[in-house]
Length: 307
Image 1 (cartoon, rainbow, N blue to C red):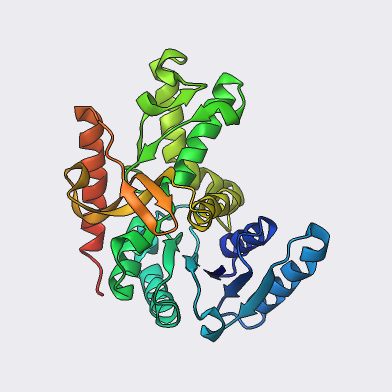
Image 2: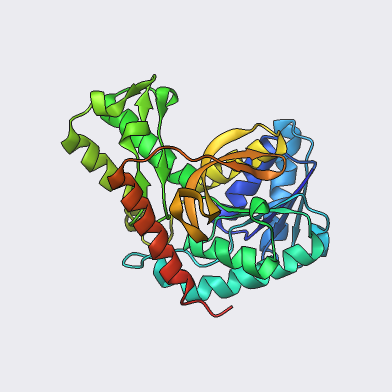
């Protein structure tokens, strides 16, 4: 198993480190345009493997020859958000970056499964699919896993319970129109609608939607990377180990949930072939309307692209 991570910034480097620590590949390749940065970080990671007892080769490079025949490519490249900047503000700059990265990576690894982490997430996943000419089962966006993890964290804090007992679902686009689903969010199987008043649920939903910018405002000069990297690696693990996990990911919809020709976060089954099934859960009218609007927002942004 060979995995390439494109982008050696905070998200990319942390993703690569987690892949190495979990020994999810025989070889991890870290790519970045900055001379010396991926090489230095990769060497540092490799020197940690004797201590961690993880027999993984780690390579840093500024080119793509070393990525040849990768099984999975994780794209994290792009500029990060700053205070006052929306995910949509990143679109023009990051679409050019994701386009060039995808073209170069797919040329060397035409059979790879591609996971996009760059923001604005849903639009960048569309860019990767179109320029890479990838089938929809082999390209997906990391968003729902991250948004769901944030929702789970906030529920656990609110109820003072273990995060291990909290399950949740957040669907839709990765942004202000994401759709947390309290009805499908539980603590040890008990719906949170039976454990929390609606006012508290509304507060947690809002904090989940604002989860990214909350961290950006604290950091001032960067954005989240610990939780995003964990979310990306959970998706990689499901694919590498053919776990058939049901996870919320940005998938290209062709009629599912009444949505066509755009990316939106929905529950999918992840296995060795990538997205092996899109799970269609029953939504009430308000939830369906919110998901439809979220997908429409993504479609509107895609329409602005010049590919």
